[in-house]
Image (cartoon, rainbow, N blue to C red; front, side):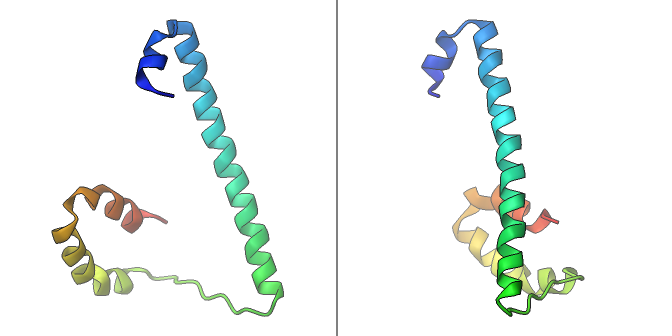
Length: 88
C-alpha cells in the first residue's frame, strides 16, 4: 500500500491494515516452512543425499574475505549480508 493511501486512512483502519499485514506475514512463514518440508521430503524420496552443516563457523571464516570484497562494492547490502550470516 502506498504511503499516501495509508496516511489517508483513519487510525482504526491503519491498525486493521497493520494487523492484516502481520497476520499475512505469519501465515506466509508457516506455509513456506510446510512447503519446504514437503519439498525436502520429495528430494530425499528421490534418492538425493542431503548434507547439513552442523558447525558453520569454519565455513563462515572461509567466506569472510568474499563478504568483505562483496561489501566493498555493495556497502548498501551490509544489513542483508548480516542477516544471512546470522541465520540459523
